[in-house]
Length: 293
Ligand SMILES: Nc1ncnc2c1ncn2[C@@H]1O[C@H](COP(=O)(O)OP(=O)(O)O)[C@@H](O)[C@H]1O
Ligand SMILES: CC(=O)N[C@@H](CCC(=O)OP(=O)(O)O)C(=O)O
Image 1 (cartoon, rainbow, N blue to C red):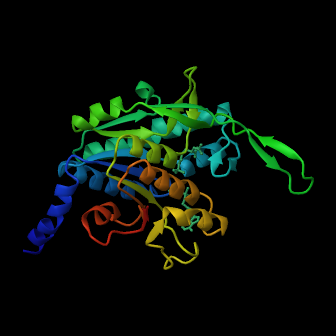
Image 2 (cartoon, rainbow, N blue to C red):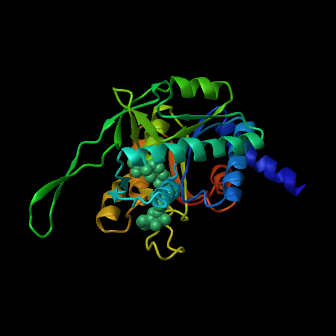
Image 3 (cartoon, rainbow, N blue to C red):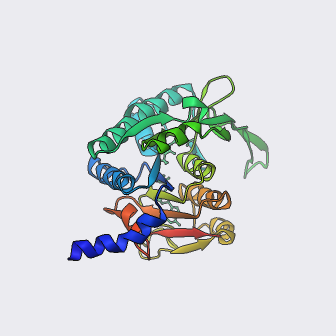
């Protein structure tokens, strides 16, 4: 009886999200081991089985950094974005496309879903241009200088045709965060940005970002200080006051962009917690931080 009750309680959510796209971002820090990646893949497959259309964008920052270090390169970031020279780009492609993407696709397949691995380059899905150098002022000398991030892109446009084709045929697209520029060259993109912008473009019902903290915390060192709801208007002061820093900045900013672009709700949740994805979708109280208008 207990199992049946659970199923009946899930019914309104199954109805609400039937044939709706759910944009899920698998964070590099959320994929801590094979088991948690497999568990998230199983939950994603379940969403698909009950009639939703999940679309996965994955990260892999920690793995890219690890491989760079193995090859004797020091990872460098500017405002959360990896400074990407040509050699780094080779590592980024190898890790994201060759390793992480295929791994997620296999795991979804093992749980019975039809998953297709692509990157933003396929079928011109994510067209991008090289990010112009950042102007920064040297604190000591007051001199202005430029920081060039190398092969890092900004999204110019998104062609959703391939995604629509896949989801309408019940395939789960699994997307590596790379873009293609007008010369056909590859650019490295932040995975949260791809998930947010693509989520808005495909009219996703929900954007769910899986990471390694329970959501946005008032005090990042205190796991019990979770902020359950954040209004878009509150975001700038949370950043200015230094409450939201580092990798959380692109997450919250892209949740806001997604909501402004028409996504109905955006959530940052702990991907290491078993079934956090299902708890978010199938319960009233949800889990993690919800970003609202
Ligand atoms: N206010 C905050 N609440 C929670 N996490 C925060 C906050 N500010 C910064 N962070 C950091 O953001 C990290 C998540 O971003 P990131 O490391 O890029 O994850 P991912 O690989 O999942 O994209 C957290 O592990 C935490 O260190
Ligand atoms: C430009 C840029 O910084 N790209 C990211 C792409 C991967 C990513 O975003 O991974 P997470 O979501 O795990 O952080 C990088 O090279 O790390």
